[in-house]
Amino acid sequence: MNVTAATPVWSDDTSQPLPGELSIDERRRISNRLGAGLAGVSLLGLGTLLLRLAPEQWQVAELIRGLAALVVGTPILASGVRGILTGDTRRATDQLVAIAVLAAAASGEFVTATLIPLFLEIGRLFEERSSLGARAAIDGVRALAARQAVRVRDGVEERVDPASLKPGEEILVRPGERIPVDGTVLVGRAAVDQSPVTGESRHEDVGPGSPVFAGTVALDGLLRVQVRGTGADTVLGRVVGLLAEMERASVPVLRLFERRAGVWLPVVLTLAATTLFFSQDLSRAIAVLVVATPTALVVAGPAAMVAAMTTATRLRILIKSSDLLERASEVDTLVLDKTGTVTVGAPAVVAVRCAEGVSARRLFEVGASCGFGSLHPVSRAVVAAARAEGVDAIPPTQVQERAGLGVVADIEGDQAALGRRELLAELGVRLDPQPETEQAEGTEVWVALRSQLLGSFVLRDQPREDARAALAAMRRLGVDRHVLLTGDRKAIAEQVGQALGMDEVIAEVLPAEKLEVVRSEQANGRTVMMVGDGVNDALALSGADVGVAIGAEVNEVALGGADVALLGADLGRLPRLLRLADITRSVIGQNVGLAFGFAAALIVLAATGVLDPLRGALAQSVAVIAVVLNSARILRFGQ
Image (cartoon, rainbow, N blue to C red; front, side, top):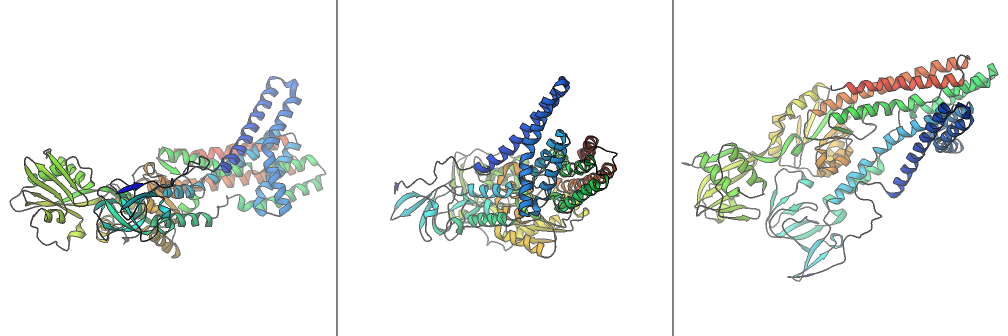
């Protein structure tokens, strides 16, 4: 066939952000906010240092510290003014902070006037960072799409953009290429890695009439595929669409203080006005405003979160979502992906069946010799099992991999084969009829030598050793419903579910169907934690109340869709995650109580004239220190 070039599929526009990156506007906005904070802190430090080293220059030092308060506080002041003019109740915190900054600055407490808005910005950065997860998931899924396709028309090959293909057209997929469309195989056989879409542990052997999906990879063999769907009409495209829809529909969770600021603001202003009315002392009114500032409240959440995230990192748990703590404590249903989550994620030999008169050692020897040098997961599993039995493979002189069927090898001058029934039938090996139980037990591969059947190996993905103990610990923590959710075959999924004591097993589902299962559980009034490791889990991870990606160091797509990532495959960290979330949420509640308690006591002292604005600012620092020290208790978790 002839090959002709087509218009380049991807542009070289470097202005577009890479997958998971922030846009230029977002980078500029965050840089401006961080730059203002750093500039304010630098000016504050410079003014304080000058005041200590040259007290006679106190006027210059105070001017510098006043400039620091102006640099950091201007955005908050502007936001507070907009809130007053527009009546936007969502800016209640900014309004109160703006009043506090003005009161502190009016009393000469520029340190307080600088630190109050700085703490607020730190808290907001924690919250905003969690919103990047859905976008990272979308970008990660898009990265799996093939960049080009080879269209075949009248015997001529042409490289084109997959989006330009129409249903009914034909394409070629060569070994090692990513399939660019959803379609049906017309000609050829190949082993296809479909785990990114279906989550199935074994590589699917496809042939004429078999469906294939965009984003999957043909491992061997040449396929001629008829296009059924492209772009948004593929399974991969629908995953992107649903993730984008979910991102648009999500509403940022308000911080604990935001829900109270609307009440707190008029209360504080009333107290300050009342104090001024009865005492006729402006200093007392300013002191009330200073001590009523939400500094300790603003830092209550972030301080606990910093401690929790530090502890989680030590435990190899990455917490991404700021509202995880509230949701995690309510979880009562655990939905787990099978492949790579509760199972190892690769086939292993679970049974050996020898023909009459053939020893297991001989079967392993020939099977491992056929699989010697092959990269197919089945071949690797047979070789690994042979080594575990102390059997060394005989290096073959010739090896021929039959795409989608198996391996034919020349061993010491004799023809041997390892593969499916169809391969052995082609070689003239007589096999008994396939028993009905074969598909239920796992993938069965056969071994023959000199056209004589030696036996077979049954391979199956195995549950992780730590899975049962981890699930039992989750039940003790009140997560009493466990659901196994997988794209794998029903019979195999039920075996894993039975071994792990699952309450329900749902098999042979695609990504959108996994999301529907999660939503169905939520519709029944349950709070769902979804645990998965692949692209096929990204939708369900985003839709769950708590999404947990496992093995996230190798799967950025699942990580992007999740609230939490377990860096590794140890399921024992799931119950530790729940305990850490419970402790952190409890500490945040204590912090809020401390902050409100301090504020109430200090308001009384300020209103009665015991505290002037300067002493009030110092007392506020004590409240912040108390909150930080209380948060530090989280660091002892897991030690």
